[in-house]
Length: 52
Length: 393
Image (cartoon, rainbow over all chains, first blue to last red; front, side, top):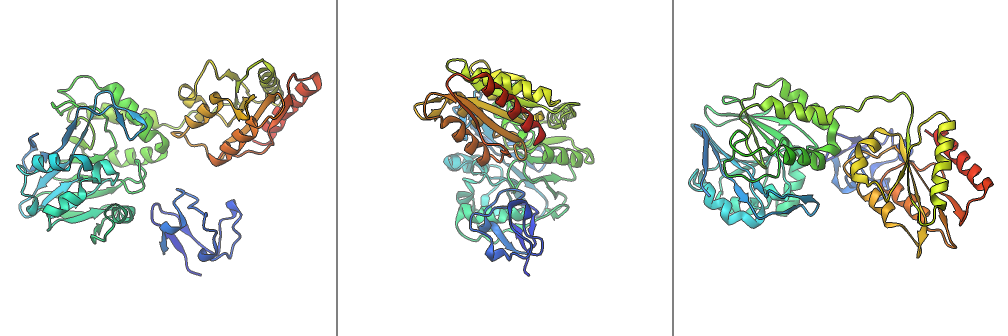
């Protein structure tokens, strides 16, 4: 599945890992993240992510 | 204002904002500030490092012109795209059609959102160089000092560091150099506390990079240029950004605002519980201390417990004020808890708990609330509450 990287910091969202710290299970595609999901590292909005 | 020649091929071209007293809505600036930009001229190319604040665009361009015809500018390096350094970007580009904007990767997104058009900037990363002809600009990644986009530019031949807001200060003195202006230590310290403090770990990373770099001059975007005793300024940053010493005991700070002493009695009972559980639980009266003076304490504690009574359906201003003074310290994963006595409704502690969650405190327990005068049983519950908080650390 496509990884997405934060345009503001070095964080990369890996669908295989999800974001378990905030209830996003492994296997969740980036597009399926809630609209209010933010970068776990710097809190940038979902719209600031680009395909890695 | 006139350009100031710093070295052969290097000019200061900035703006003195002597009237400014409040910067960025949030900061006092009793000595005004400067918006510093720099022109670096090599044998072949010219670079402008940082633009200026939008309202000073005309002033800025008139200072810039004697240093260089804007049409000669080949590169417009944006070390930091906050509007006080990018507001005049559009005006500069209008008269500098040959200038390529140079930014970090996050800077590309920000410059697009500032100009609302794609200027096809050149993206640079750690170690990239631009040769101007006998003047080489090297870019140093320095994120979150204090925005995601921030970077440093290093002029290799002259060992000059253009550091953006890092090592800057809101201090306006046309004598420009740190060894000519009056003592501005307090403005320098205050600037760190408000701007850099939230990013201490990034400050430490940047200092490691500076340690490896021969530096004869540091040119920030606000305040005096550092050309003597540079290490003194760097060492202050090192001291202020140092990791706090580890305490032997865990520590939860208890703050309270109490009308009739009921919330205060709860505070002390919770403190006893925390102590019995083997941690420290000092109690502070919010009518006597304020958050800004307690930042060091809060930063090094494992969490805070905030008590407020409820008046007219709201928490007391003291509790809100405490929470709104914490933006410059890292709160994520700190424990937060609330408590309070109340007359008949008792929303105060609930509202403060919600606010804590918004600030990314971990709030493991529901607020502890007691109607009016706590009974002995209530106070024992408060002690148990304190113990549970320690257990949740």
